[in-house]
Length: 70
Image (cartoon, rainbow, N blue to C red; front, top):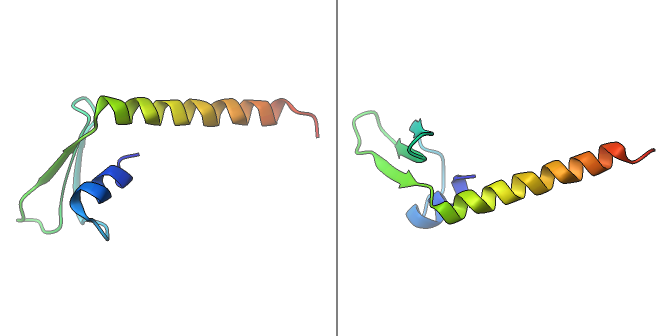
């Protein structure tokens, strides 16, 4: 959910080795080395709404598929 916006904002081309996630603050901190500076990304309300809508759509689609007889 966070990968695409982070990649666009930081020109990220690979994975970082260190992450900290604060779900309450909706924040992800990451860095490449143990002593390097943290880069912080906070999820916007628009991104959160978009992600929720996508997951709800996937859930509804899965319900419909499971209700259809084979």
